Image (cartoon, rainbow, N blue to C red; front, side, top):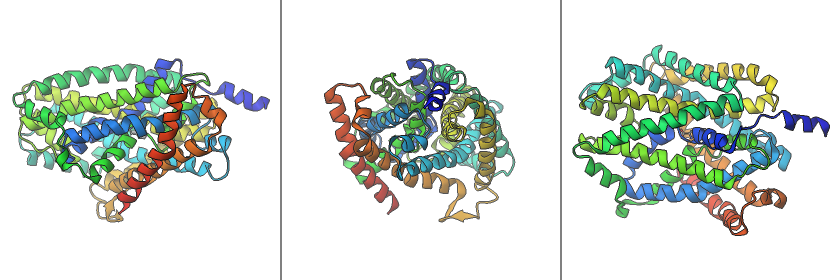
Length: 446
Ligand code: PHE
């Protein structure tokens, strides 16, 4: 008992409520909001998708976020031990799957994040800014298929991540978020102001804001749910881990609502940056993942001060990616260091080595090793598919069932919210979330 008491004491915590909100928002806001959200919106018809997305974020997404934070905060343990502590049985497997998922996402996330660092530099040197999408596309493909250069940028990005994680919970992760999140908002506002005042931006704005429900189908809901999960960092223990650094009496519901709001706000602002520009320059909103790396540089090339705005945009992506990669890293570090601050350093170094070892073939899978496929996909796409379509929704489903049906009543009471609010949360987490997630999981697989 005493020993456990000492461990809880030694556990690191966020320095304040605001510190937690910024760190968790840092985890949520990432490539998912700025790179993925605009192109997924573009592919799914715009306004109607936005509306469905927001509805999902503030019901299922927010409920699951509350559940994960509660599981972490009440046990003061990492993603796997939190389940062992609160229920035992086979439940820790959900945590192990989450830790593995975090590691796998990390290994391709740092590759794409490396591209954003490279594109920040290359915007300034002008080498990525050409006027036709075909030319820009060729530059992009040339870059990502190079066997050496992207690996170097991955290493640079990984080193930054390690630097932050080594600083620990309050003076590393939280401090980075305190500086980076405000910078991110300022850059976003500057870029959005530039984009919405372009000649011809109106068409993009109405595409983004005017819902056209005639094109909504099942797949729109599936895309929105998947996007909400990835964007809010749900289903793989990241928010359990961040919740475990909250103090037992820190409020959950209000903070979770702030995090979801910040995350949605950044996605919407990113939509204001990308979509008006795409329409103003007559590009296709449904260009897919290449929208930010191929379509945007060709747009920047045609704008006055394009190199500056391009560098600013990719720098923004890199910042957003950094605080998210830190969260992915922390899930793994938290587990292997078992709450002992003295083990943070060696564990962080081992995890960084391991993720770099997996990141190398992941990067090469875009070029020289593209012939080696898993399920018909190059390694990078296979990792993305496996985590996004299988382990994250499966983890989310099991976490919802756990929080709704297994978690003890006393723990639920620790939510400290009003009876109606807790009732609404329980309804979503018991019925709505499991059914909705089961549907995407199955539909995603077939
Ligand atoms: N939410 C991050 C993004 O939108 C990705 C992420 C997923 C980060 C899971 C941590 C955990 O890019």
